Amino acid sequence: MERTLVLAKPDAVQRGLAGTIIARLEARGLNIVAIKLIQIDRPMAERHYEAHIGKPFFEGLVRFITSSPVVATVLEGNRAIDIVRQTMGETDPAKATPGTIRGDFALDIGRNLVHGSDSPEAAQREIALFFDQAELLSYDRSLDPWIIES
Image 1 (cartoon, rainbow, N blue to C red):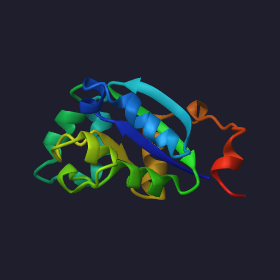
Image 2: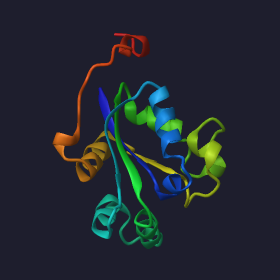
Image 3: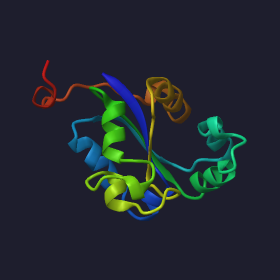
């Protein structure tokens, strides 16, 4: 099983779409192992976006992600990172396929509703940034055999 971080960003929270985003990912068969509503501060935002330090859009990213609460979630499942990224759609909503979160609910690349880790290494780093190990739960669901062939 693979784990990934998903953030329903400030625009999703303000528009009342955090639950819809999480529901779509759960409907794919992913399991919530941690979830919380948080206000990201500047130091956390800088750590989260450290790969973009020095880029012209860095300040805008930090300003936006700290502007309102986010819903941080850790999802688990077979190929969770790929499944989340497919379900989110292209980063630029104008290029996102209808049926994806961004394709259905977003218009602007700067307000694209959701973040998902892009690799196992990023997932591990991002999960540790937003959650303590004790906040990550593991449990079996009785419907898993109906979702994943073993």
